Length: 324
Image (tube, rainbow, N blue to C red; front, side):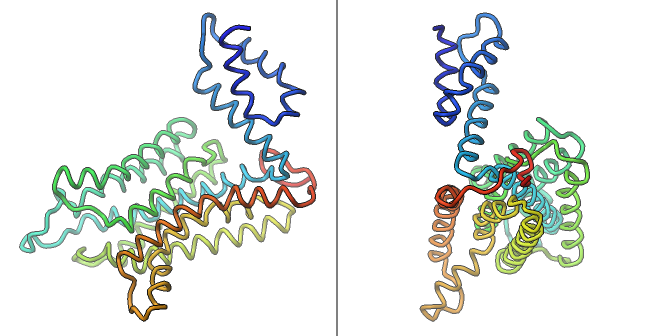
């Protein structure tokens, strides 16, 4: 057995044992036939393809074949939400506080956050006009740019959006990485339409002076956006379930983490309210965000495990999740 074949077989362990016994030889043989002469290691694309295929088969074996299509639906909604918020903030960023206030700004913009917001708008546009690898690269760059904002703020000694704004954006972006970049044109247009809606909202609501709008965003706009996202996800879940399609149910589960982070201000206020505090304190908000960020991602595998213990349901389409 060659080293390349051995490594393909090692990756094949991503599949359930029964599936490996039935089709393992066929899968490994296909990859070996397609490999370039002299290759010693599987390509990154081959490795990712094998792992994805193994995950899908394990989910189907657990009676949860709708998970992947459900996560893709959640990713589309997450990207649309991220584009809406980025457009709102990008437009608000062009109205910095007066220079007499002595507040450090980023050129003509309020903060270095403008770089991140523009990358999100580019990512939404790429999904519309350049589906496939360019769109996925655009989303990846937007996530990295958002992650780099606090560091860039420290290095350049300029302002930045608060973490209560950046963290939900990162959660939305992490989920958006799973979006199906080959969806039909009307579906791919949703993030761009949402961005236009965010810009329109900002043009109506943001006045002549920007100062303080990030605080308002954290307290008002983020929870409102999270509420709308939850309502849309639930309505989709109900509509799809009526068609014996459980994608919507899984999309709701996948979206609970970003929805929770969008509502950290309210959740923390509920916690502090038990102690008589009129508004959430910073430590409570940090603790609430940590709890949501740690427990939220665990909900999907927990739900899959619970699903596995229930009787098997009718077979579903592995691509769209619809039941036959």
